[in-house]
Length: 170
Image 1 (cartoon, rainbow, N blue to C red):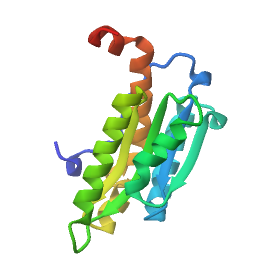
Image 2 (image 1 turned 180 degrees about the vertical axis):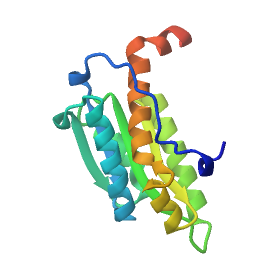
Image 3 (image 1 turned 60 degrees about the horizontal axis):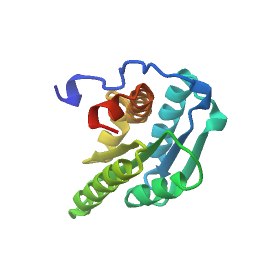
Image 4 (image 1 turned 45 degrees about the horizontal axis):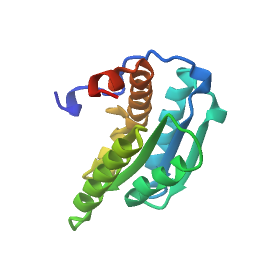
């Protein structure tokens, strides 16, 4: 089903343990600030609804989407985090820059998450125009910041269950 037919911000609740101990980092791109601010607001409201304390959420900004993986790595080096949510927006332009940036960010976050064992959530909008960005930052397609936060919570819950360790033999 395409996102045109479903509001993907409708997500299930994660079954979390020790919610008041969960530490989450959020890295937000300053580029397309009106969009990324809306994504951040969606993520923060979702985390608050799940019971995550605001003082347990560390927020930092980076210049653009390309810097999200490095920002996540730097944030992870300053403390014990259960997940890092990376929020940004790359709008297709006249060149193929968007493809290179989006692929680099996806690969960087995947690699960082796998190597660190800390979920690095891909909350980068990869859109064709500003209208699509607005539709995914609180518009008719929901708020992808909400989805990124829900993904982080579900990954933390999975890690708390020990399911990953059991399945891959740690």
